[in-house]
Structure formats: structure tokens, C-alpha cells
Length: 218
Image (tube, rainbow, N blue to C red; front, side, top):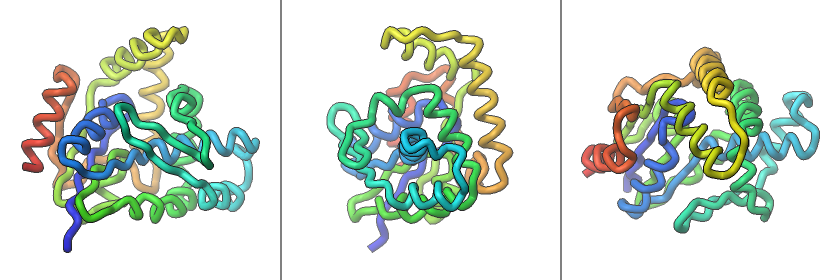
């Protein structure tokens, strides 16, 4: 039996996570947030003071991670039995995750962890290389993007709502730097799969994007 897979790739802040979770809920499929895996690894490395360790040591930490996603009204991410959901949203975590994601050995170590999320009723996988590297066989593929400024504005508003001090110019610069790093890395760069449907969410509501993705699958 072929397991249906929908991949949603794109840059940080394009709305991949929210769209993917809503689509997975409506389809009754499992959800994989690949970015959370790299962010969780960044947190684990920071806690162990391993961010600048040898690659072999980083790979060892990656393989040993016990990671689980709990999807209710909101997604919870559990690392070694501890809820790390709030920590994953920190800018420092995202930047560190983007840096370690450029290491081919780390990506190879986490590849099978991601592929193990497939299950019989279907999978929605969001990330940057889901449709090109992790699940190239996926029947449904989307590349979701938005302008860097739009994504920075969204992130700025999220942080302000949480009472976190933020600077829009710095967030915009960080996003542009991360985009460039993701696009130019040698292994699994951020590019649309040749057979992906391209969606620009700059002027679309989350619900409009969800409906567009659901129409693709249905």
C-alpha cells in the first residue's frame, strides 16, 4: 500500500507550520515538523555546550535525541520527555538550527528519523527539503513562500503579542541571512521540487492557503 505524502517546503516565516498542521488535521494525517527537529537539536547542543563541538560529537547527539510531537489544539514538542515548545520559537534557536542544518553529516543522521514518520493514513511534512530529499516520492508537493519583509512583519507581531521586545529591521536582516544560507548550502539547499506547486502567501490569509493546498490533495 502506498502511503500518501504531502510535502510543504519553503523559507522561514512563510506559514508552513500553521498551514501544515491545519491541513493534517483536516485530512486526518500525521504531521512532521522537520524544522522542529533541527531546532530541538540546536537546543540540545546548546544545553550540552556542544554547538562548536566536532561533527562526530554533534551527530552522536542527533542520533540519541528522543523526540516526539503531540498535536492537540496546539503542537507540543517533547525532547527527552521535556516540553521544549516555547524554547523552539526563540530567534537564537532558529539561527543555530539553520547553521547546524548546513552540516551534511547532521542532515544524513536525521534523515531516517524524518522518514520514520510515515504511517498508513498519510503524512504532511513541512520543511525545506521535504519534497526534494526526504520524500522525493511524495505525490503532493507545495513550495510555500512570502516576501522577506512580510515574513519579518509576521514574526515581529508574534513576538510583540508574547511581550517579547523585537526589532523589525533586525528580524528582516536575520531572515534574509537565513534565506541565503539555506539557498546556498551544498547539501539539500532550499529550492522548490520540480513538480511542486508554488504558492506565495504574502497577500493570502492562512485559511486561503489551507484551502488551496487541500484542493490540490482532494
